[in-house]
Amino acid sequence: MDSVLALTRGRPLGFWVVLRHLRLEENAFTAVLQPGEGHPNLIGQASLRNDNTFGQVTFVLPAASQMTLVARLMDELARQVGQQGGLGLLAAVEDESPLFEGLRQSGFAVYARQRVWRLGNLPLNDAPAGEWLPLTALDEFAIRSLYQALTPPLVQRAEPFGAHGLAGMVYQQGGELLGFMEAHFGPRGILLYPLFHPEVRQPAAALRSYLRGLHFSLGRPVYVAVRSYQAWLEDALRDLGGEAVVQHALLVRHLTLAQRAPVLAPATASRDNRQPALMGPLPEETRPLPARVVLPEGAITHESYYN
Image 1 (cartoon, rainbow, N blue to C red):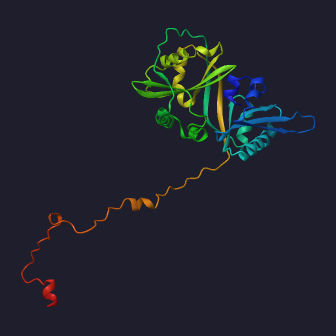
Image 2: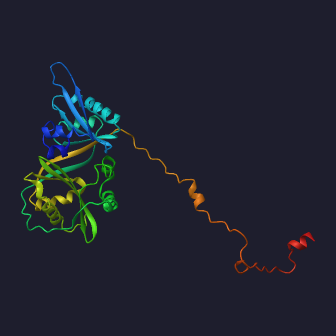
Image 3: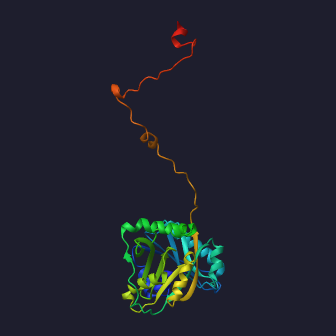
């Protein structure tokens, strides 16, 4: 149920995944339910990185025979993640998986879909170099604007900007930043998450130029995860000889309620906007001249009234 782990490190109980959970910056939570009466135990695991606000469900097994207990298992994982400051749980499930309906019944909702493509051996020697540059701190504002313009609000709420840390390559076209590539590397494969603006003229050429820099792939398979709101990139992947291998439904279970709150202007704003007071009399040449008023004949003036 974690596409990054599944495609880069293999089985959820494999050796490389166990080593990943030994890192201090990541917490792993495991829940075991014992139904009894000869039924196998239902085991689930979730992880939460220190710099993330959403936990990730890693696996649930055996799911097919214990669907009635999935909701109780998810409640326990949500409780453990919430105690560590997590705001929700994420899961990636195949559409045909029996877990899909079980997660929907336990409070999960679909916020996006993605299709994973596998790229074969590409002749990249003749690929153009392109304008892929390493990400710097100066690119953060441009990437944030690109993310907010292309990503639906449902996805932004489940995957806040910079939740995984900004790391990757940026693509420039005509001096303008129009693409960002996030890469995850593991012993079993390489997983890429592209984010391209529709104004990119040749997305296939841009992808080829990025793949040209993967000299250290060491024969590992390269996967590209295309979200539903970036589906127009699939034509470029077909041109590169890519093959769709799996389709995931991305689900989220929020542990908090979103509430709109007004942002009040600080009280000092009105004081800061006041005009400065004039100190002392104005010079003679800058004093305004008195207005000359012409009254009609017989009109009562201030002086004649009191006199």
